[in-house]
Each structure stands twice: as C-alpha cells, then as structure tokens.
Length: 368
Image (tube, rainbow, N blue to C red):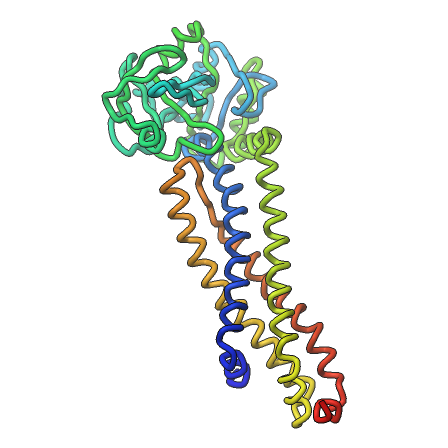
C-alpha cells in the first residue's frame, strides 16, 4: 500500500485529475438517477404517505394519474361493516388549473373531509387543515414560487378560494396537489353523493391483502388495491406519461459515468507504464505489479467517490433551493451500485495495460 500511495503522490496533479474524473462521473450518475427517483417519489407521495392500508376505487380503475373513478357514497357503509376495518375515509379527486397571480399551474385537486383521519395533507408547513368551503391548501414551495402566502386569494377550478394552509411534499416536476373541502368539490364537480376513492385503515395492516380481496368480491363494481400495489400501478402509469424518458436518461448517465471512470483509470495506469516496467525490471513479481496497480485504482475510485458524494450533496441542496419542484433522491441501493460498478470497472481498466507490462522482458526496459 505504501508503494501505491507514494507512486500516486509522485505526480499530485495527475492524481487529482484522476480523482476529479471519478468524482464528476459519480455526480452525473447520482444526479440523473436522483431526478428520476425523486420525480417518481413525488408523484406517488399522496398514496405512500396517507397512512392507508387499502384503496377502493371504481371497477376497472387501478391508478390515480390519468384516471377517473366515481362510486356511490353508499359503498362506504358496506366497507365499514367488514371485519378488521377501522376507518373509511372518502375523497373526490380531479385535475385542473390553479391560477395564482395570473399564472396557471396544472394541479390535482383533492376534496377531503377535514374531520376524517386520512385523505388530506399528511404534512403541513404552516396553517390549518380544518378548512372551510372557501379555503384551500397548496404546497409551500409552490406558494413561494408564485409569491403568495396564507390569507391570499387564488383561483381553483375557476373558483376564488383563500389560502388557509401550506402543505409539504405536494409539489413536483410534473404537477402539484391542492386540497379543498369535500363538500366544495362536490358542488364544483356536481358529484352529489359520489366519491372517487375510499381510503381504508385496518386494525392490523397484516390483514390488508385478505380485506382487499373481500371488499372486491363482496362490494359491487369496485376494485381494491393495497397501498404498495396502488403505488406500483401508478408508477407504471407515470412511466407511460413521459417520466420513462427521465429513467432512460439516468440509465444512459450511469453508463457514461462508468465509462468515464474506466477511461480515467485506464489512462492513469497507461501513463505510469514506464514506472511499472522499472519495478518489474528490478525484481517485482507479476503478483506485486497487479497488487500495486489495483491498489492505486481502488484508492483513486474511493477518494473520487467521496469527493463526488460531497458534490452531489451540494448539487442536491442547490437544486432543491432554487427549483423546489425538483427533488433529487439518492437511494442507498443506487449509491452502493454505483460504487461497486466503479471499483469493478477501475480494476478491469487497469488490468488491460498492466497485463501487457507484466509480460515485458525486463531487458527491454533497461534498453529503453
């Protein structure tokens, strides 16, 4: 290890360039992958974070995005009577425009009952959730971007409403979510005694699959999904809506990043080929040469990885501050995958030149 470090520090400029190449490759991988993961998480946050075990919707419907679900309100009583069902909340759900300071923003509109446990915003920055018919809750980041605050008036589906609260995690690259009172949305949609989704909480979440199946079999014209299945179904729909392009970009970014690491390590190893040849000429074994080269490659990747991680964290903070609709989500799985792929490609990239050097006759080195 001492020889490897000494050899690297012999040319600090080249050493830093190698670390920088790895760092920026990791930054590319994490940022592009983070945009896709963040967009996907934001788009399914309502389902994931509502604290619901089973979702009940109109028969034939299996998602929220790009779907219309409408059921008689009476279905709620049938569901409530079933074993293990603790609470059943109800919401109306539609899409439309928010007009804030003469600027339109596409939004999903959720009509919820403030007296019920689920269906409304799951996290608030400020304000209240017990809203009146002439009030609305919008995302905190959207409010800042449009220059409005609690007490200001905006247009929701063409109706003037006053901002009564600011929610968190309800603003994404694709859309935002606004919450209004259920009775108000019923009037706007002319959907008296109709509901879009029933949100079922159970006394024990372990029963969710059995209860979902029972509701589907015994309640007329409904479909049921556990939260996990509902989220998975919505993610498939999201990919069809164009987010798949972001996923493709993140995959391409991963490939390019790994190739950059490979090229960086290959070039760094090749540039030091004369040094390795001298080591072989003075008696270093093939095993010792491989060990030194692999150690140097791993050191460059590890240091570059940590430098890239710091750059990624800085980029994440800057992007989310200046563009709150974009969330960069770095998952542990993606980080481990990137690190493992970088080390593997670094070893392969350094193996190619050192294999040739290890086979050179020592006398050729002395003659040169």
